[in-house]
Structures are given as structure tokens and as C-alpha cells.
Image (cartoon, rainbow, N blue to C red; front, side):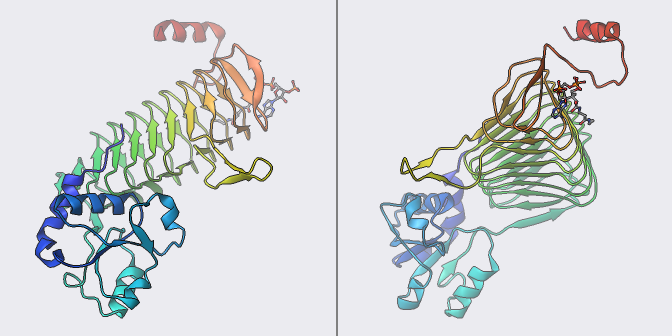
Length: 348
Ligand SMILES: CC(C)(COP(=O)(O)OP(=O)(O)OC[C@H]1O[C@@H](n2cnc3c(N)ncnc32)[C@H](O)[C@@H]1OP(=O)(O)O)[C@@H](O)C(=O)NCCC(=O)NCCS
């Protein structure tokens, strides 16, 4: 489901600068996926680079064996042409400016962010960004090759921020309600989908880092203070017809490395969290990486969930354990068992 980095798009972005770049010693600023994509695109245009620069001294351990990764200070010792692959960072402009580097002569910085508010009839630009739908109240940031699709009759309140990273997609389907103070952020090459008739309540924060994927199903209701957060290369899937109370946190991985000194290894963490269809999650629940919840489950208030569970169970506690089997739930309060059977018959 994830979109993939489109080299063609980067090639098109770089083409206008070709006559400036040619025959220069080139460094790409940013030893990361997008930097690699810039390198590939330059190679396609028959231009080789001298290496990468990155202000993170550990960047060369991120898998750039074929080219040297240097700190930005290398620009103080020798003059290069710099292709900045980063998102907009004032400090990078400042650093280059202090060295006397001039945009379009000594460096290019094509990954400009596009800021949009109050859009009525779709949008597309030369950086490969597109928006389908209407974004009346939200403020949207697009980072290049990104796609935002907003379905019909979607109700977006004030102070909603949607930010699409490079080559990422955010899809908000029809009849969805997005209340105020909500932030939905996708980083490079990630994908966020929010299903039809789903409601996100105020103070919700959904963040998908690079190469990650969040899929929220149809007809779900989420209470306020929801936080769904994915680090790189991870997945969160939430099924249809789920009911989440308030103050809930969902993660797909730990976000930091855990080291086993006895085994002399870095522990591999889970990078996937799956929640089935028709799951009711009580208030204050935390769902940790590797969790799998079956269909029609109940998660007790304030539970900390980190294991795999079958369908039709009630789980609770820290860590959550099965407290009851063969249970189900209905959104209506105070119903009779007959009513429940009728509803189930209709569903089946
Ligand atoms: C999980 C829940 C639905 C279970 O209700 P229930 O089926 O009536 O369960 P019981 O009260 O019979 O409890 C069964 C056992 O689980 C324990 N238990 C129940 N809920 C628990 C919880 N959230 N955390 C830890 N233990 C819990 C009970 O103490 C009891 O333990 P015991 O057998 O040692 O006495 C309920 O306790 C709950 O947490 N509701 C969520 C309420 C909520 O968040 N509403 C928000 C509206 S969206």
C-alpha cells in the first residue's frame, strides 16, 4: 500500500538545474532515503556525486557504504556544489549563507514545503504534490510527491494540521469527522488511511514516521487525547467498527534500541500492532508494539496491552490478560440479551 519513492519526479525537479550542476563536485546534504533517491536521480542524468553530508555524525552507519558521509564542516575546507535533499530547515540555509554559498549558484534546495489553507477544488504542483477534495478549515503542508485525498462530506474542524512527507499519502475517506486540535503527520514514504464514517475527537495526534503505514477502518469512533505513533518501517492496523474511549495510546515499536549486554546484541523489536474489527477499548489504555487483538474484543480501562489475543475475549490489567472468554459488546447501553441476539442476526 505504501507509495514508493518516484525517481522520475526527483529527476524532473533536478532537470532545470542541470546546467548549473554539471562538471561540479557535488555533495548531497542528507544521508537518508531521500538523499539516496536524489543520488539515483542524478545518476540517471549521468551525474555522479562526491559524497553525502549530514550533521548526524552516525549517519554513515545508516547504509551508505558506496559514498563517504562527512559532516557539514567539510564545506569549510573545500568548495562543493550542494544538493540539499532535506526538508526545509532554517539552520541549513543559515549555514550555507554564512559560508557565502548562493542559492542556484552554489547550492539548490528543491524540497520546499507548500503550505495550503482553504482549498475548494483540488491542487497539484510541479513538485508532484496533489490534493483531492476540499480542505476548508485544515492547514496542510506538502513536502513533494505527496498525496492528500479527502473524501466527500468530511467534516474538518478548526485548528487541524495535516502534514504529508515526501512521497507519502494521507487518505481520509467519506463522511469522516475530524474534530479540532488534531494533527495528522506522515513522514517520507509513509501511508495513513482513515476509513469512512470514522470520527477522530479533539486533541488527537497521529504520526507515521518514514516507511510506515497506518490503516484505520470504517465506522470507528475515537475519544479525545488519542495518540497513534509509528517509528520507521512499522505498521498499525485498526479494523472496522471499533470504539476507542479517551486517553488511548497506540504504538507499533519502541522507538529506541534495547541492548542485551549478555548476548551482545541489539534486541529486535516488533514493528506491527494489529487491532481487529469491532474492538472496544476502555479509557486510558496503552497498546504496545507487537500487540494483536482479535475481533469483537473488550479491553479494560487503564490496561497495558502487549500480547496476542483471540476473538471474543475481555482482556484487562497490566500487562493485560484474558479476564473473560466468549464475550461481546454493543455500543448501546443497558440492552437485553434478546436485543443483542437480534443485532447479531442482522449483522450475520
Ligand atoms: C473490562 C470491563 C468491561 C470488564 O467488565 P466486567 O465484564 O463486568 O468484569 P468484572 O467487573 O466482572 O471483572 C472481572 C475481573 O477482572 C478485573 N477487572 C475488570 N476490569 C479491569 C481493568 N480495567 N483492569 C484490571 N482488572 C480489571 C476485576 O477486578 C475482576 O477481577 P477479580 O475476578 O479478581 O475480582 C470493565 O471492567 C472496564 O474496564 N470497562 C471499561 C469502562 C470504560 O473505559 N468506559 C469508557 C466508555 S467508552
